[in-house]
Image (cartoon, rainbow, N blue to C red; front, top):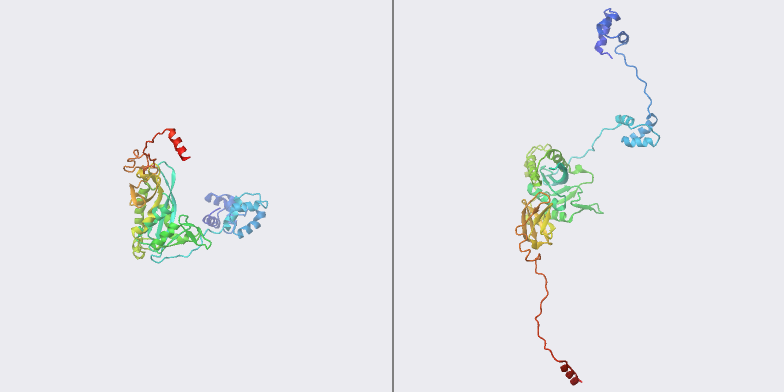
Length: 407
């Protein structure tokens, strides 16, 4: 098809009295092309091609009904049409559905801003990384965000159990310097055992006791409504997409030092929504006072049993204790980079926190006097030897005489 400028020039050449042959020499176009454009009033429209019949034609009315009912999945439509005798493929269905498919859209939600000190949002996220052997590993990260200031705290952990959750939660509250009035979470199995007949959550007893002890009210968002706690949802997405990719670290301790520094930097940057630095808004959070260390110290302990060879397993590492506590129930807690092991209220061993899985950490004088005590912490019960007394030996005649006297 010739351009409009070329068509105009053809008409100008004809108006100047030039023949078709001369116009052919000047423009290089064929005789038939020149005649077609000179005879047409403007640019001639191409002749429409006859539309070929397709295998879908007999089923288009039924297909329109499915589309009207909101069925746009072409795999489903193919199955439904085949049940009615359709013998064509899925490509022609896709071509027909495409212009009729509504644009993707997320449901609208109401924006919710929390007053200072009112709410914190908490969540777990499973991140991936590549270890030194090139294998893809998974690691959970705890996230907590204050609703008003957007202050963020992140901590990686080896486990997602209740004890790890409470430890991370206490570390977060110490990082913020106070306790919010409420804590919003989804129905994570770490703290929620299920829903009761009254549709209220059945909290884990240890978490429920902890929340009551520090004066914080736990709340749960609706099922399949992650936008209810959108602040922490965006934070865990950000750490998955921006913090972890390409991240290099030696162990869990190194990774947590890096994420702590990352949180410090993020909390000192202008937030995209509030237009202020979270660290500046933190002063207006009006958080509740932190409990004394003695008040929540018990929530840092985890029960463990000492093995026969005198070791306690904690986060994949075996820490030694004096052999006399073998087989006994002890309590373990992690404080300031150290692992402390208690029997009742007595500290029996303290080790620097080791992050290398399957490591073995001996305790000083762990097996002292083990051989002399034959492995027993207390003396074993033994029989008592009775002193030997001499017994007088008499003749049997003596007993015969005594019997006669008695008779």
